[in-house]
Structure formats: C-alpha cells, structure tokens
Length: 379
Image (cartoon, rainbow, N blue to C red; front, side, top):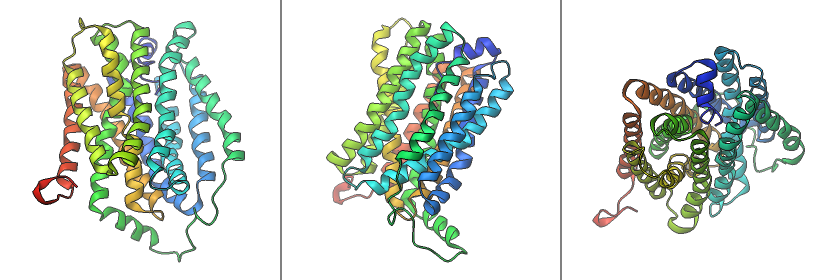
C-alpha cells in the first residue's frame, strides 16, 4: 500500500502516468491472484506454518530489492510481480489458521484484528513513506519496509505452532479429491455470490489505495502531507472497519450477509459523495469521508473471508479462501487498472462513479440471494 502515497513521487521520478501507476497495482495483485488458489490447496494439505514462511519470504525480499530499482519502471514491475506471488499466500494461510483456532462467536472479530494490521500498517506508511520520500528519496521506503518483513521470518518460524490433529485432514486416497472439493465449492450458490462480491469489493480496495492520494493532490489540489494524512485516515478507517464489522456480525446481527449488504451501501454512498466533492469545501470534512471510504471500501475484507471460510467448512476453508482471494485480488488488479484508465480518459468523478456502480451490484446480489421470510423481510 505504499504505492498510493508514493504515486506523486513515482510520477515525477520515473515520468509515468496514472495508468502506469494503476498497472503497478495490477501486476502486484494479479500475481497474488495467481498464487492464492494453489496456496489454499497447499495449506489444506500441508498446514499453515510452512506456508507462513513462504508468504513472508517471497513477499519481503523483492520489496527490499525495490530499494535498488529506482531507475527502472520495468524492474520495479518485475519485483512487484514476484512479491505478489508471495503475498497471495497470506490470506489463505492466516485465515485458515484463525479459522481453526477460534469458534464461530469470535472468529470474525479475531480475523478482523488480523486483517486490521494491514490498513493500520498502511496508515503508518501513508505518513512514513511521504516523509522518507521528501527527506531522502522514494525508493528508500520500500527498502525499509522489505527489511521489516524479512525480520518477521525467524519470529514466525519459532513462534507459530500447528494445532496438530485439528489442522491437517485425515489421509485420503489420491485421485480426484481436489476436483471433487473444487466442484463442491463451485456448485454452492452462496459461495459463488461471495466470490463475485470479492471481485467487486476488491475493485474498490485497489482503486482507493492506489489513487486516493493522487486524487487529493491533483484534483483537489491538497498539499502532499495533507493528502498523505487523509490516506492514513482512510487506512485507520479500514483497520477499525475490519474489526468493527466482525464484532457487529458476531455480536449484534449474527448474519454475515446482512452486514456485508450494509458495507456495500456505505461504499456506494461514500464513493458518490467523493465523485461530487468540490475542492473549495473544507479539507477538514474530508477526514470523515476518507475514514468512511476505508471503513467500507477496505474494511469489508475480514468479514467477507470469514463468511467464505464458514460456508466452505474446515476441510475446504483454505481452498475456498484461496479461490476467493484469487478473485478478490484479481478485482484489485483489474479494478485499479480500469480506474486509472478512466481517470486518464474522463477524469476522477467518472472513476468514482464507476466504483459506486460496483458496490451497487453487490447490494443487488445480496438482496437477490438473501432468503426471505413471510412478508418479505430479510432473514
């Protein structure tokens, strides 16, 4: 998520366009989408621990090497692609681990805390990367971030323990078990709807994280540090959202679909407001809007993946979450690229309305799929 705040520096240093910045997100998350599904299958079969190490190592080392790639946009793309292959392992590995360690009344909350680490880290990055880029140069920031990721390798190796007898399935005959498992997942109607929602929510996440700072800087003419602070506010909103939506679902409604519907409604409203925001409106008001953009557009993640894992069940949770992550990160990749091209062709208002349309489709999907009681009330 450093690439959003670093966008203006990348444009100036590498002489690239918004569409090319969107391509960076596209490459990173397309690679994540490619690796997530096979990683999920591997996690269901071999466990969480060794896949955690692959996730951290394959992600962190290329990010560290990006600190030495500041002269070449092409090398940067290659390293982003390699890092994305590692990043794709993260969701199925950690979500499977949390799924087996926590019960249904605390699972979404626990996963929300885990998922909140990502936007909270991005909130720090929103200020840290801008400061480092202004003080030194933009490529110093990924070098430091990559070093921190590599530092996590020995910690994960020595601290994480597999819950033996719970995580790994009983030995099965080889043959068609993978195909049967995948067919079972793809024939479940609610899972299919959840997978589509992954792609559409991912479109919003990729676009917001990649282009919010550029939008604030170039369309609203906000100062760079203010834009970075607003990006951080969006990430704080995302972190709080990932925990809050889980608590709301676990403790208040006990209905994952209804809460996901609420998230999509908030996403639709906030992106429409953003599309029609005027630069002469008080920037202080945008802090609330930035918070809500993150709260809905990025805060959905933990609850949606919990929902997918629960629909699939313990024996197929890794595979289902891996497939959902593949589709979600595909949405991040394609959505950010489309958003960048829309900005280049038609400007930011049209691009924000494009996101509003994606969220509205999610609303329709969950309204159509929800079971109804007599009188038409949502169950």
